[in-house]
Image 1 (tube, rainbow over the protein chains, first blue to last red):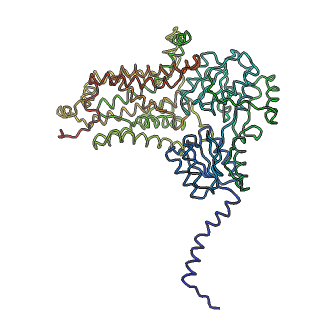
Image 2 (image 1 turned 180 degrees about the horizontal axis):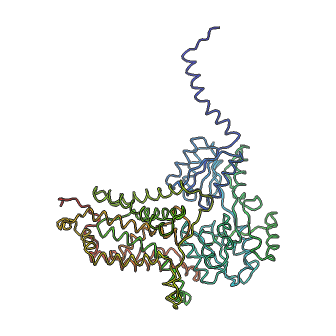
Image 3 (image 1 turned 135 degrees about the horizontal axis):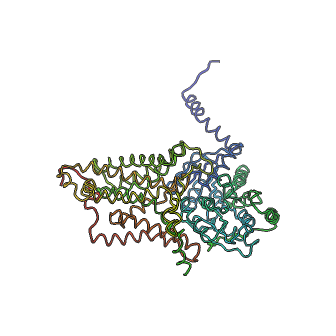
Length: 327
Length: 313
């Protein structure tokens, strides 16, 4: 049989060959979802670093494919979201605190794409999911450990801005302290910045001058002052102990892995992702945990804390979530 | 209320005032020198960021702390030279060029940092300048812990104020700089080069700004974060106006701002219901008030923001 090729066949064949990678990509996407993250700040900044590291780990284990942009300004943010949506990402991760309305508009334009946004608002439609940062449980337990460690009974804390996700941590730390030490008094300072370690340090020094000898460092810089003045500090979100050994004795760690696993499971099962994923930051899912240095906390404080931790994990007892501004 | 007054008698408060003021003193002196020669330098925020990064990076790569400050000064001077090239011989808009330098330098600082330094969830550290605790002098009651237990760059800043005041008001060079800011044509008529003087003033002023930035990463803290200058450069621009372009008053302005900051951080801890935003506003309100008063006395360098072109009226 003589092989003949018409011009039409040639064009169709060429087009199919050219389009092949797209089909392959789509087929792959169905087994391993592609997550594109749009980070508003550089990825080494504490909060983003927790998400970034968890996404990197998920990618390394083959659960997802991960790509990201960082330092994206709010004015550029919807554009970056759209670009990833156009490029066929399955899940777009982001933080919509500064642009709640615009982010929802983008999501509405791309119903096939799932959006997972750190947000102060609720979920929207079938594809706009939200999450909150919930490490208040670990902060509470850290407070229980710290409660009996103070000689002055004055407990300080340094925060960035008085927003709900910061307030709830400081309030939980305080209730943890109060549970084991009813005589405790509290100080707090907000520095009006997310990354101004020099300022956080000055705020911490001000509290040490006012008698505080345990500081909850919601912001980096707090533990530096504690170290310089020989008092103790608690870290938030990430593990500060290696950087400040002998000063930071406990850390209320945020784990983002469970949240990623939850949304990936939803995407693979074809479930709508327009829901709240905040619960996966809770201790019951492993979303937050307390890590502490055994030798640096009073041994008699540990059993009570462990009992409380078990009660939280089993769902027997919830740490109250108080988002009001700490005085 | 008594708490608030007790705080004022606390030596730790006044020691904090000097610490907080140090980067501002460098920044405000730098901005003042540029403006005295007739060039507004809005590149300050980016130049301080670059200083913070480069000074820290030099020490991180093994240089001594003093060399770190020098590296910061050189990087600042280079950015200053860029701003000066655009605004002095080319006579471009000083606002646009300055803001451009801020955007460029902030981004470049972070880019270089990311290229060279491996970062996890916490940035790497260096051994920063420690307080000197000068023997005997530190033991003087009250004044000792305030004045003699600071780190080296703080003394350098105070020395820079004296040097700047001396050079500007007591030397022929200072006279030439001030005259260029007032009337560049008159300088030219004297046989001096207004463009050279402006170029030099912007380069040296920018180097000072960068040292102010480096203070943040080599003394106040021991790591670099991209946004850590946090508007201190803009505060310096406002403080120059508050100081009506005089080094002595610039020192007072920087100390006053630092006092508000140190005091509000302490008030927050002792007094309930003091919104910290009010205190953050204070230096700007002061500067605007000062500007209103200064405008009547016309102390602004007369040819500030007017590019000099020879033969042009």
